[in-house]
Image 1 (tube, helix red, strand yellow):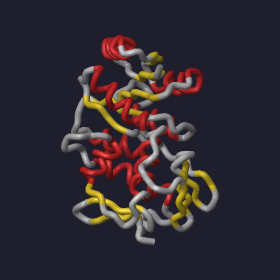
Image 2: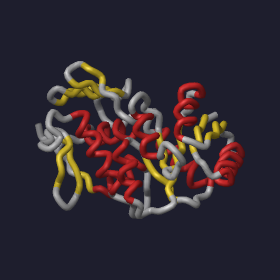
Image 3: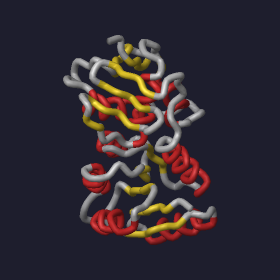
Image 4: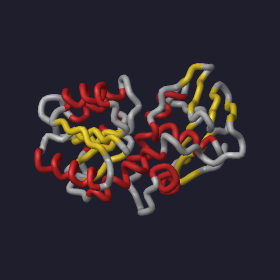
Length: 227
């Protein structure tokens, strides 16, 4: 059973999410504010967080930032507008995916399951552990070390790095990365990819503005290396 923390101030939406998710076998923890969400995150140990951006008091963006300060729990943003700049800022703050409201419980559950799989499924590779410069990538333990120190990577950041590093110097389009990492089979939102790359560079690169590992292929996508 997946334990889902729902941080949503609208009682009707909160109730609807709870009913739909419980019907599908999930346990729900329901709160109406970011402050209560942070407290419940510590006390309830959820497997995934559904986070509304438009919250009273502490905003959804600030809540996301504070969660990422101490936890790598998967976060799926709930947003009322797909063109909202807050979606991009939320992704940059550490969210793993987003869903536009209103959305069915089936859609939300599918996004939840996809992000949860990123914490348990290694990227395909013939080697369990590889070394790239000062990075060590362990596909069995699902962890990445830089100069011997383990990096705190969110699920999507880890999945993206595992996928790219499994094929050094191979260039992947943003659409290919959406399909392989986010499991979006449709023509998706490239903001997901670009925001995740930005966060990942901040953790693995000595100089994110001159990346050594996660390189941009202008007008197309990204590649790992060359080193």
